[in-house]
Length: 261
Ligand SMILES: Nc1nc2c(c(=O)[nH]1)N[C@H]1C(S)=C(S)[C@@H](COP(=O)(O)O)O[C@H]1N2
Ligand SMILES: [Mo]
Image 1 (cartoon, rainbow, N blue to C red):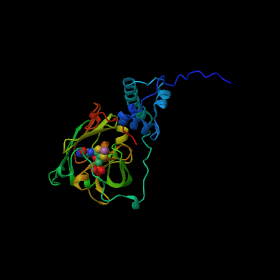
Image 2: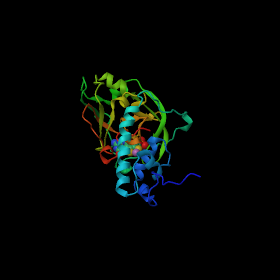
Image 3: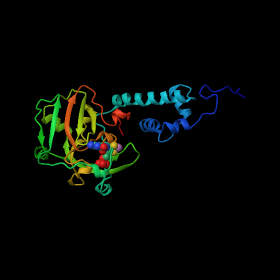
Image 4: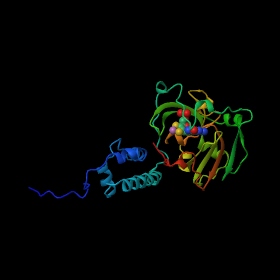
């Protein structure tokens, strides 16, 4: 019989699973990215990292490091052509589910006649765009899954101008690192250029074939099928192409910047 030697991976004292519960957001983000589906345990964490994660501080810093590491690794592994799954019309939810960092009654009205999309940064033609000019551009429709970091999702149908086409039209520098957005409600967001050029990333004007309701982004919103919902700003008023990391509302509040799904 083999002698029983203490496993180098086995913590010396019983581990307190509440450490993982207290860091639920970080744990979930790691699970989602590593396709662990709710199975990340302290044992697995020890195996993955080679660290003895028996105390609170060590566990938290390991989780933070993994979460940040995942952002970089994801961007590196990300294939700009990987498509999000598309669904039949029968699966589309109507009405869609609202979310913002404030209540629905606070959503601002936009006058389509005076609204303008301001352009800034590494763009050849920085003239602002009126809504009717955006409507004149060719549009595509996608039926994809919208996933919120809060843990809910739905399948929706969004129609709009591919962002790539728009960036080409305004003479954006496609070698820039980021595209940033500012919204009428003070919200902001940004994506990497590869995601901006992704075929399922669009400046959306319609949901379910009807003009976007203001709650869902009228007059235009971004729709990034390969990322979590918070990466798709609604009611956009300005767009910037830049090499300076623009951050964003949730990005600045410690959500993973890349946030792929
Ligand atoms: N302007 C603006 N855009 C926003 C937000 C916001 O608060 N303001 N919330 C984001 C989040 S967290 C999600 S999940 C989606 C929700 O989009 P929906 O209301 O169309 O489902 O919008 C994103 N875009
Ligand atoms: Mo969200």
